[in-house]
Length: 172
Image (tube, rainbow, N blue to C red):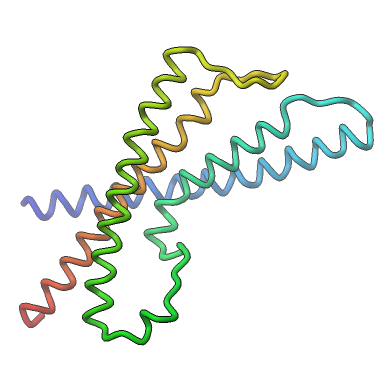
């Protein structure tokens, strides 16, 4: 019963991250479209703009943080495995577990500090210093949300590593 519930939660986390991956992909496309629009309007039509670059940056930040958890699930993060490929498989599994735990602690710390920063920006009504001046609570939201989701995905990954190692130790 408990394992079935946990597997359901883990599947829910992965489904959420998959959905956010698609949203992140759309954000990248929208960012590219906005930048193209900005170039045409500013340099071809000679009309000044104030919101396009900042919006594109915010969309790229959103895509980066919201897509990170799916990248971890899908194995798309950068791995430098030149040395680890030479190590015994059992050792690399232990190394993977250790590095995943360290990364989890880092992501949790970043999420915790990020939620504090987001709340401060929200409570104090911080705004961008650009002419457009959007509220900073929007872009500041993506870091802690992304790190929280990445932390959850690391928990899923760590549990899968432990489960796989446990099965090998018990002759499965």
